[in-house]
Length: 84
Image 1: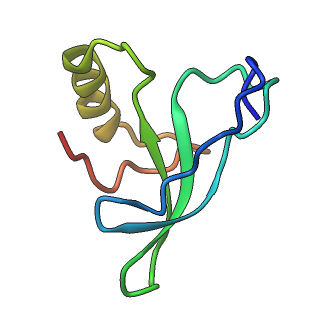
Image 2 (image 1 turned 120 degrees about the vertical axis):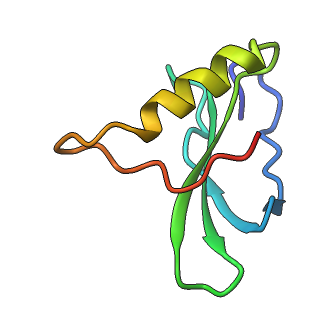
């Protein structure tokens, strides 16, 4: 359920990934991105898929994701795939 009381619509697929559930499915979420837990088509990888917030600047989102791809910090999961 979203903050406005509208039921959260979870897509069945995002790209080549099958969506298992929404990561931020409650109205109290403070994360602007839409994040989902998904599995690769072969079932070998479980990933978090993040989509930009509705109305976001896609060029900025892409630039930040590209920068994040180069980070290697303790506790930070690597960016495995960037689809623009």
